[in-house]
Length: 462
Image 1 (spheres, one colour):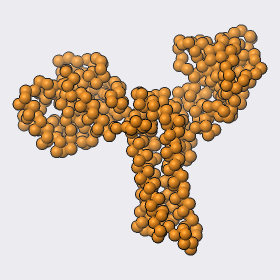
Image 2 (cartoon, helix red, strand yellow):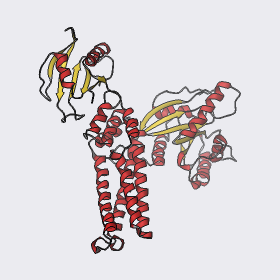
Image 3 (cartoon, helix red, strand yellow):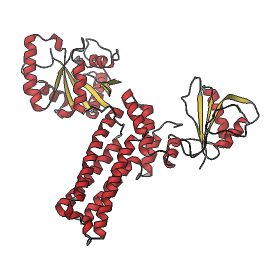
Image 4 (cartoon, one colour):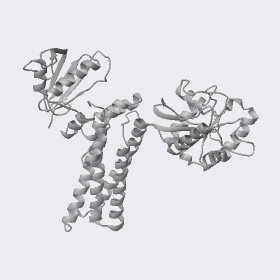
């Protein structure tokens, strides 16, 4: 396998720049680059880095990690020179002259996975830790990197293997009384315990996915309802232009914020209305596209103007969106509630109770001007998406959730075949598929194209 090399620190000005090499020839390349004949594993050596003609490129430290006791499991060299685009590129070019090839995205992590230094969950956690948008997400990714999530999955895999052994033994030796699983209830009990454990891990993984990915929230409503003001209030800065002129927002505007530990990818949109303005009409089309793609939709309306006495917020939602969105992805935001009189507030509360809450929807009264109700809005969003991560949560990805759900479904099939049809062969097949689905998480059963997609999303040099 070729020796690979890449710059492992961001390009640009900096105190230190690191180039990483991994492979069987990494050690020899370091010797040729520095003129030294030996390096002591895990000890820093100060060296000068030379061109082929003997001129000095840079000077710095060389660290040698002897395989298999390295990140990739191969011989690894780290060249720590001065930061800077020119120096780093000259040093990397010299390494290529010595026979190294450019590492592709995620290739160092892939080699660690391929050499059993990491499983797939831990490898993904490296990228998740780098990309974390909150302290909680970073902490969760590090716990997954340390192997906590993998340990939970491996414990489940052991339970499944143990179940399969009992079932296969009963099929192969049907006359043996001590393996009569269809009548003694032992396998059913163990299967149900495994199903309960899967549900627990699935619940943890759902929280981990929310920590990692956050949610895409779209703010929509009529012009001048307060959408841009709400974006600014949530972002804590003036990101969107706010004026009294209807149609000020002509295009979608994105902002990412972290509130109560939950990452919100906010999209402000153009006010929904009929218009002859070509530019505004394009903005409204983009708004409708964003609405269809949102995880959560915040319908912002002006309580002093947008809802007439004979209409309701839900009727307004139907008018704006063409149909009433599902309750699980719609949160109604009554803006400018501070301008209502006490009598108006009583009417609004009664209407909310009768028309909104009873139909499974929720309204939050806010004032983007004063900030009243914003905390309630954030709490309502977290509740809507079920975000309440435990203190020791673990990062997870969509593919992990998919694998866990498929595993749960195969276990449900096995339970039905066992308790209803008493079909041992079908129980065994369902358990086999459950084990394979679960093994996809750690990489025990993973297609090459999936691995390519996962590691291809990593940064160069990692």
